[in-house]
Structures are given as structure tokens and as C-alpha cells.
Image (tube, rainbow, N blue to C red; front, side, top):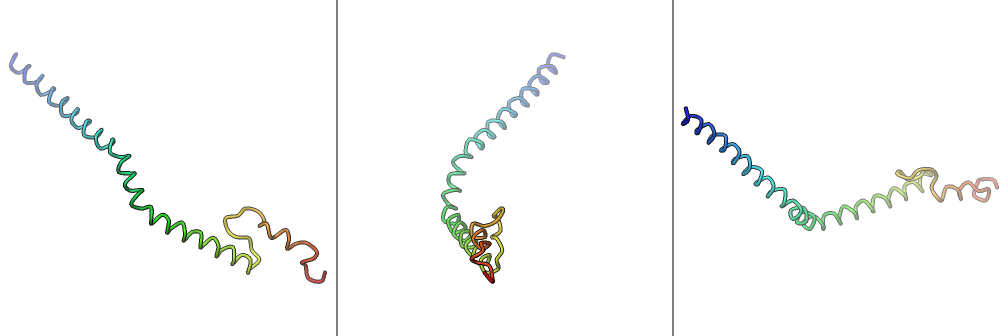
Length: 95
């Protein structure tokens, strides 16, 4: 019976050791995240700049279209700064 008890204790120790190894490996992977994130940010920086330029171009186009159609640009709450001027008596027809 003592031999069986020894084997059961040894088997239990295997599980604990393997659990520890898996946890250590997970910790190494987690520890690499900041460096991987830095590398990814660096690699995509030129693309981010292009996307920013595209968004700025679209925002400018939306503003121009809003002026042409007399609608406030999307994404702005309330009236645009120019809309209050357009409502003055000097800009209304017949005045």
C-alpha cells in the first residue's frame, strides 16, 4: 500500500509541476505584450498617418458639401458657426 501511496503522491506532484510550467509560459507571453505592441504601433504608424489624412479630407469635404446644401456638417451638434450669420437680416432675401 505504501508504494501505491507514493505513486499517487508522485502523480499529484506532476500535475502541480506542469501547472507551474504552463503558468510560467503564460507569464512570459504576457510579459512580451508591451514590446509587441510597440513594434505594431511602429509598423502601422505610416498607415495611421494616411488614415488620418483621409479622415481630414473627408471632414473638409463634408464641410464644403454642407455649405453648398445649407445643412450643418455631420458630427457637429447644434448650429454651425456660420448658420447664425446666415440668419441675420442682412443676408435674408428681400432685406
